[in-house]
Amino acid sequence: MKSLQKSHPAPGLEWREAAVPTPGPDEVLLRVRATGVCGTDLHIDEWTSSYHFMARALPVTIGHEFSAEVSACGDRVSGLARGQLVTVRPSVVCGVCAACRGQDFDACVTRQGMGVTRHGAFAEWVVAPARNCVPVPAGVDPLVAALAEPLSVSLEAVRTGGVKRGDRVLVLGPGNIGQGIALLAREAGAAQVVVAGHGDAPRMAVLQRLGFNDLIDSAQGGLAHGLAPYLAQGRFDVVIEATGAAAVIGPALQALKSHGVLVITGIHAAPVPIDLTALVRQHQSLRGSYRAPEAAWPEVVAFIAQHQDQLRHMITHRVPLSEAARGFALARERIATKVMVLPDAGWTPE
Image (cartoon, rainbow, N blue to C red):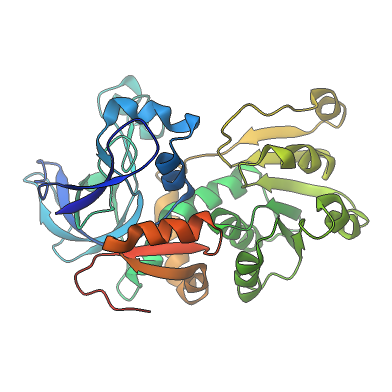
């Protein structure tokens, strides 16, 4: 099979021939149905410094946001049937560290990431541990099911911020993660959700289709100008950053109320200066948010099943696997919210 791989510690990806993998006793062979293009994939392609840790694992097939059908099961696998649609937690725990031995899998210290340090889903077939496969209810579109991983990141950001009913929430970044944060903050009962971007008209249009109208384009007059009418009502209870852009951190803290919470979700390529004195005097909290706990995944899948018609708006482009580079370009140019890459077999144009 063809697989899209990072093969050298340098910019660029390449197509390589790979054997169809064989599942181990506790693994399943999965036929990939849809794989989302993520900012992580773009960083890996560009070989930004925050992903140099991958070097020891190369070559590796990338792609970690996906849905797939179970094709074959290892000898010790139970509870998964052939043909079952699943989404897959890409974080693979080691099973041998002290945390894993104590069944505290979220605290595993030597985990691997599918599509990062273990082969991922920009291929026709992939092997995953059975325990990482989360069954998807019948009737859920495989493309929408492939949104589970980014939605799990969004859910963790909302929960890290402690968003509660009646809160005013500012989301910085209108991409897929930011859109998920907006949806899940609204689901948590936020009274107002404001989303800010910079020259992101296509993604803002998706947010409007998702029912959000408090939108700021900082390319038109700057972020401070866009925020002014909202800050006239008071500063925000929670600000969640999903840009990876250092320039927004200062304004984010300025927009945050005393005792408010700023959540950092974006991956930043370099250290970011912060006015700690202002943070201390305002009693503000700064929290990082990354991977969702395993227990959150069934909740995310249930949310998808309940809201899939709405979530489908996030999937703005589809490309066949052989044209994945075109999908990467659409994501990089911020034309797309979410590009889904589908296997060439059975591919039909939009």
